[in-house]
Length: 192
Image 1 (cartoon, rainbow, N blue to C red):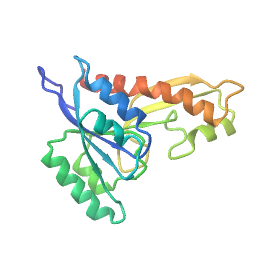
Image 2 (image 1 turned 90 degrees about the vertical axis):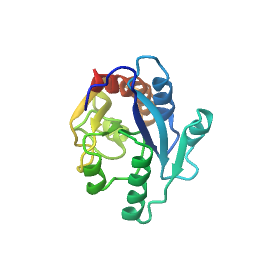
Image 3 (image 1 turned 135 degrees about the vertical axis):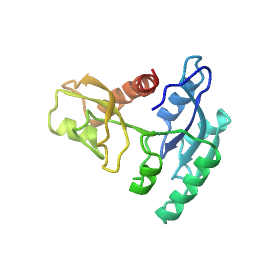
Image 4 (image 1 turned 90 degrees about the horizontal axis):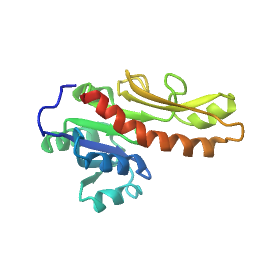
């Protein structure tokens, strides 16, 4: 991605499906002086996603899309992104898979946070898998989105020790705290 010059911040859209804790965290990050991004849009595939309340709280434009017809929906989203002059997409707990065509149109400008140390445990149930396999370490990864799920170039990772008493829920909480630090740090790395 291009280096940012002066005070121009990159117009960013965040895609969410759930509680939006990473979305809220990215909003806070976008308010600091040295941040390279401004959050101008949030897109959700879930009408009642709890994270949408942050859009209201921080006066960010929000759009909810029904993904029953993916091709049609993605076309509408791409038109909206163009209209809003969005240059970066941050996936933050977005539980839909974007098509090859969509990713190609935004090539190299979509990043995601994933709750495992990729390439280990792509997809869902990462914490459960880490516990089941008695992993000593777990963590999270920020990576570029490609057409292959959770396979894009890694930007940054954060590794934590799995405690003997951890279960999938306690591990998820520990990793989420790390995600909140890692996502902004990875964005800073991209633009520095």
